[in-house]
Image 1 (cartoon, helix red, strand yellow):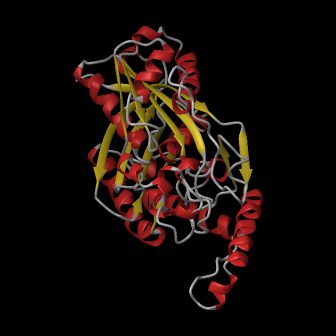
Image 2: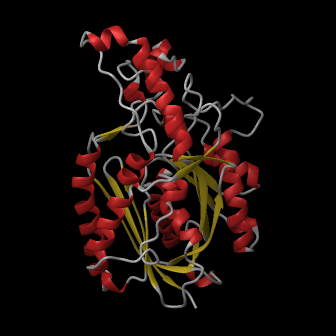
Image 3: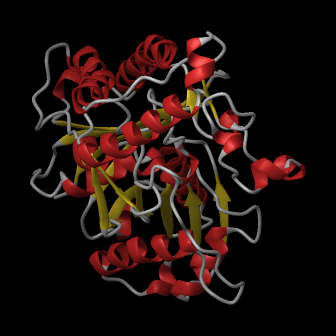
Length: 383
């Protein structure tokens, strides 16, 4: 059994950012139009009037202040309210692969070793733009890498599941180094006409290189990894190839995605209160149990890089794990700037807020989401 280390990370941030103020203005314009067009139905009690959103509501509910997206114009158009991402020809690199390559290039540069040492590429993400060929194989080709590659999807926990898979490949001797990428275009699965969720997600891509520890020159020793799944319908997205027989779904027609349209469950839907009530204790207990099995005191963790889902969830988990109110330095929050970026959130936090730590410092990368799924990766800063 060979131990592994996180040797390098990379981040690609799309060029467009949407503030809460911009998002609320577009949403409320849509609400006003919907209520006006359905005034008779609203007055007759047949149709429920839509409620406007507000910056205050968004920030209190989530802690989010802005998000990065691959297309801003389409999302902020009250008549469209979804990103405009043109199709690409089959001989062009796909949008997800292009984002992943940009994040991977930074990770490879920071790593500073020959690319032929990478033995596998994993694309671990929530939102795959096609069934096949795998995005991971496309990324592998674009980067000129050898070995093998495949996609894996465990919703928001995909990155920690990917790290665990990479660790296992290194432990077995299958690879000496593994590249994992997490490209997420979450704006394409979000219903921007739903007041309860129109603000949640953003777009981004991250990359992690996991290497056998005895060859890593820097980075973080991986002390232990653990995964957990438990089925729940409380976070769901029903879009898939079986939906293509419905023209309104395949064409993303406006009527299909109206508040009472037939396709709303083909985008992100959740029962937020149930998710909070069930996921927070599940994840907190998992972290504490895993730390105990590794002989670690959870209270000694210098930093938590949690999945960036909701500031209230993150603060509650941090409090349960550390046994006190954590500082922002201890419990990193980046969702105010990036929003929820699904699998990439904990990796963004780790990438941007780990360089200041010193040899021997302990930290935790943890993700959790639909499934339910959760993953923990305990790490220690190398000398």
